[in-house]
Length: 249
Ligand code: NAP
Image (cartoon, rainbow, N blue to C red; front, side, top):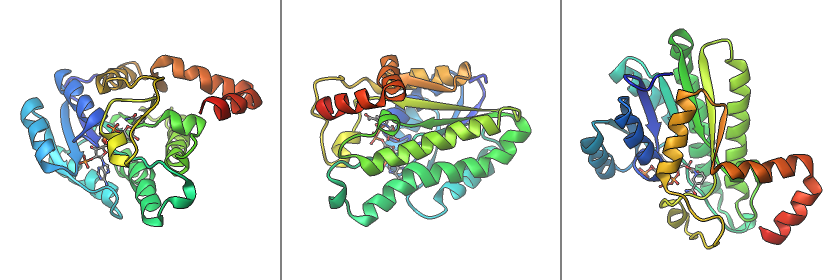
């Protein structure tokens, strides 16, 4: 997939990784449609990059489908969909209120499925690329982030299954698996990131890896790359992994 001239819909574009993706793809010559909730931040990004904007709250029922329809109505096609919008929550599972769990499920998992379903028919016709921003939490599980990790594991399984299903349909699927990224994500979830290792990466690192995944049709990219190591240990030596995880978190 060439980025120059491609119409790219990016969710969660108003902040962090999404905003960095918009800047990177706009620099590469894509027509970026930046979707988010915060109108002021989206407008600033639009005047900086030339992106067009769509306001949406993806926690609402059918918001994913509606966003896809509005993007198609305005631009006639979407070549690349970047499912990036997401939110976290950290704390003991028993202390998580039902509405919050529903919000995580809706934004992190239901909306990407709806958006994908709505855009896929035209992509199967013309070709396209689906990108999902997952998390290392979805590959490994994280103490105190059970629901967040479950939404990202679900997204992962959805993306991997689609990649198999769509292999012959000219629609590529990429999973981006970031570790810790320096964005407002942690402040917004109400619990700052406190560990010394791994150090948070700049969101531009994720944006560059994501662009590379589109350009080279990569099934998955870890950011940073060494994160594939604990995933491999968990796959090959699960008991060892569990001992290490309970000791080091
Ligand atoms: P962020 O700066 O908090 O950005 C989150 C984005 O998601 C914002 O643009 C936000 O929109 C959007 N969003 C949240 N709830 C929404 C809703 N109800 N409707 C529409 N948009 C909504 O965090 P980030 O780090 O860039 O996160 C981007 C993605 O990376 C997420 O899927 C996250 O799970 C994933 N990730 C992050 C990290 C990390 O360490 N930061 C690590 C692994 C994976 P508004 O600003 O308009 O509200």
